[in-house]
Length: 355
Image (cartoon, rainbow, N blue to C red; front, top):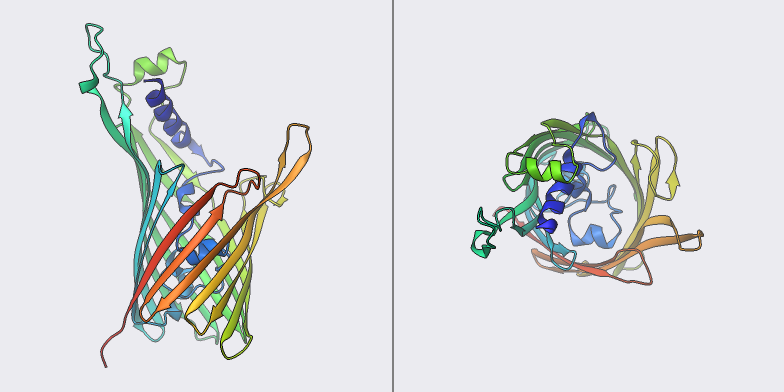
């Protein structure tokens, strides 16, 4: 019972805000999609050009190499407790514009609800245990367009967010993203502005079953409220190299800039903090790709009060088999002594019109 109540209270604390902007809001949308980008430490803002562009930088949709692309990904966190699922479709409208639709779900399922474990006579009734899910959903509707300015592309996302915590709490949210990419010879520059107008989640709570618990535990009963996600700027600069007829190399240096106060990142200040990251992709005959990246650089205090520098290394591999792309990424949480890894697989399939 204590575990269930703790989970519920944690959910309320995350969503409980009225006219305030917490540092971490809608963070499930910061996890990332596509094993290619994850293996490069999210360093694909300026170079992304496939179906995952809708998430990273929607301007990249105009560079689809196929008429239509489908993408899916599944990953698990915390020993399989939390599951992250992603599916998307993108297609060209013509040579200068494209559309995309992406669906994201991050959830913890089968959480025991033991609030009715004990009946009115004081008997333990395991048959009264129910289960519920805590799930976050997002739908991204993307439109991308090639500018009349040579090398420039621009795009936008309309985001619809749905967050559900069993029958206890739920929220609807709406937001906008914008993105641009600009090519200069073999250099690529890109920026994505997420939640540019701020994203608002309207929370509603059903606390009828929990009022006694909240009073006994000294917690405030949450009220219907608005949670605000402040804008974030993602950027990157990439360079393509033709090493030989068989080998190519793509490198990208990127950054995530937040404007909600000091965060524990490499460059931190108030109100702006910047988290840099770097990734590269070595290609062989457009068939096999080796990828790696470094990100999430932080200073973490140890038991002696000293600051330890940590970072998150990522590696991956990609295989292109005609219209099918199979990508794999192995990511570390950033603590070299613990070395906990997550394995991520994603698939892409291309469809072209018959001529």
